[in-house]
Length: 200
Image (cartoon, rainbow, N blue to C red; front, top):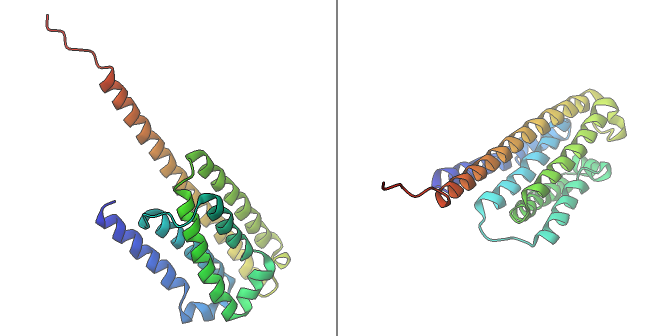
């Protein structure tokens, strides 16, 4: 990893954390669900990026890390805990710290997973996020009554769009890595099986 890439990822993660955890954003979260939910994406995503790209040592074993990290993400999207974080600042601060830690754990675990399992995880995340987005767009009161229904509908649309953008980026990156690995295999095979020069 070159220094430019390291610094870029680090600065981006710092930006995600700073824009999510600050007095202005925290105050606005009491009246609008959009920054509240986007902070979930930002903090969890920042944790994943930090541990996957910037931290070389393994944080936790994948058999423990993945269930724990996924459980943290699920917990704070469960309506009861989602509402607690929206209403009580001290609970929200715990929520934000644990989401960041959950992302760190997931990012560390991803290093040990094969590509097929990563694709499966992506599919499961898209299914879960799609269901939550649909609930917010169609019947937001089933999820929470703390915010105006129209704002929750907008949130559902934003979540759906963000999920698809992230998924497209991940899939394109996955395909690019597959093609690069295939090219390397072909090149090595060609070098091994190249015909000797004919001196006649």
